[in-house]
Amino acid sequence: MQNIIDGNKLASDIRSEIAAEVDMLKAEGKKVPHLAAVLVGNDGSSETYVANKIKDCSEVGFLSSLIRFDQNVDEALLLQKIDELNKDEEIDGFIVQLPLPDHISELKIIEAVNPLKDVDGFHPVNTGRMVLGLPGFLPATPYGILEILKRYRIETSGMYCVVIGRSNIVGRPLSILLSQKGYDATVTVVHTKTKAMAEITRKADILISAVGQPEFVKAEMVKEGAVVIDVGTTRIKFPDSKSGWKLVGDVDFKNVAPKCSFITPVPGGVGPMTRVALLLNTLKAAKGKSI
Ligand code: GUN
Image 1 (cartoon, rainbow, N blue to C red):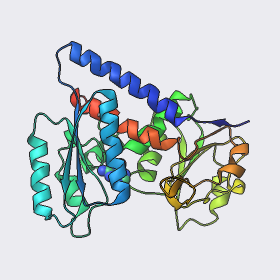
Image 2: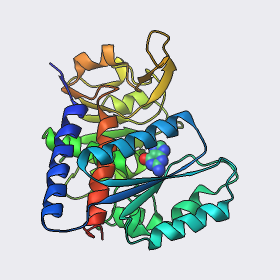
Image 3: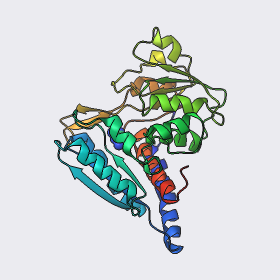
């Protein structure tokens, strides 16, 4: 019998914990955490993501600032703003929402962020610290998934974990983290060039899919009793909804769920936990405890 993981409830519990910490900081006369978000252009998904980040901040009592630039902004101007944010003592952490327009180098922008304020955990210094098992900022989605595993007491030690996808922000960091001491899983990463993928995924005790393709994970790819974590967030047209679209994951949920011991739904699984992970990183930045 499968358990459907309630990411909304978990994230709401964590937000309450964070709000209580903010109250304590205030009572001690300390500074309230302050997140800044830089948004370039008007991409619909990015607008939604950033609006949600700002809303989450207000819900837990953080301060937030939104800094907007036109789609045609010069890279130099963006770098100058990052330099200002790096130096601004009022700002504890900040993010530059991705993707950026083609004329701007994402790597240059990411590398310009002070690693101590890099609450996205995208800077190579934070990636390197993660690989070495040193304290730093973890990228939000892997961090959120680790919190799901921890709070649902899902055993990872000695488990065979298969991660589908090798992106810099989800698949690769997650595969590294799960194999580290403390999590102690045996991890395989599969990707677009993997041969006989189903033979590998069918062996997984924990199967994590971060592909971005609806119904990619079919029932025959999943072992009976597996834990399935669905990171996919694809928007598909859905005229019956108010917005005209709906969010779907990578997993053929209807046919896969009956085989699972635990499964995350989309929406309401990993997504809310990714959002709350950014708040946890911002709190850590404000307390000066990232490194
Ligand atoms: N675009 C999609 N996901 C993310 C994220 O976690 N952080 C930033 N900065 N941009 C994104």
